[in-house]
Length: 294
Image (cartoon, rainbow, N blue to C red; front, side):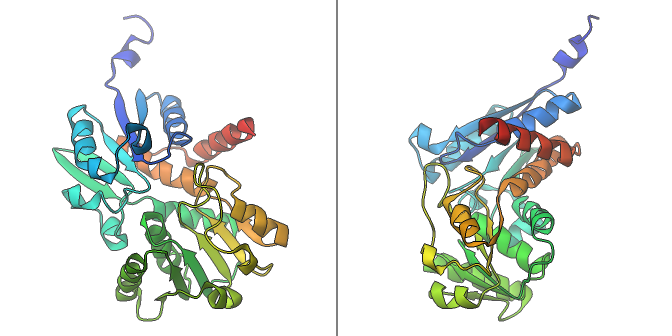
C-alpha cells in the first residue's frame, strides 16, 4: 500500500455552520486545522442564510439535507440558536436549561442539541478578567448567545445580580424567568432603564449581533459607558468592535470574543469527532490567523 493511501481512505467527517452573515466565520479554519493536526479528514461547510436568500423557516429543510448528505453535525449561530430547538429529538441537560442550541450532533438517526457557548465564555472570562467584581452585571441580548452567557455568569462565574436588556421584551422576560427558576428570585432581572443600571454596574456583557461584520454600530448609547466598567464582547468578527474601541478609549478593562469562539469550537469539535482537541493549539492558530489579516 502506498504511503498515505490508508489516510485517504478514512471516511471524511463533514460538518457545517448554519447562520446569517457568516462568511467571515473562523470556524472552518479552526476545525479543519485542528483535524489536520490530528490526522483526520474533515470538511467544514458554511450554510449562510443570507447567501441562500432564506430565513429561519428554512431550518427544517437544511437540517434534513445535512442528514441526507451524511453530516456528522452542525454548528448553529444567529438567528437560529433557539429556532432550531423544536426540530431536535434530544437536548443535552445544559442546552435544555439555557434554552438555546449552538451544536447539533447527528447520531443513530437522532438529532441531539448541545450548547458549547456557555462552556467557552467562562474560560475566556477567567483568563481575561481575573479578579473583576461580579456583584452587578448588565447583559445586552437575551437571544441564544445571551442565554448561554447568562447561564455561565450565574452558574460558573458567580455573578450576584444579572440585569438583562433586550429590544424584544418578551424574550428578555422569558430568559429572566428561566434564570430565576434555576438560580433563585432576584439573581436575574429584566430591565428597560439601561442608564440607571449601568451607573451602578460592575460590568457589561454585549451578546447581541450588533457589532458583527455586516451589523456595525453600538447596542447602547456610548455615553452610558464609564471608566469603572469592565466590558466583555461576544462578537469576534471583527475582533475589535466599536463597543470595545469606545470602552478602551475610556480606560475600561475589555475582553473580546476571540477566546470564547475558540473554546466553544473546541468542545464542538469533540462532540463531532469523539476526539479531544488541543485547545491551546486551536487558540494559537486563531491568533495567528487574526494577526495575519490585520
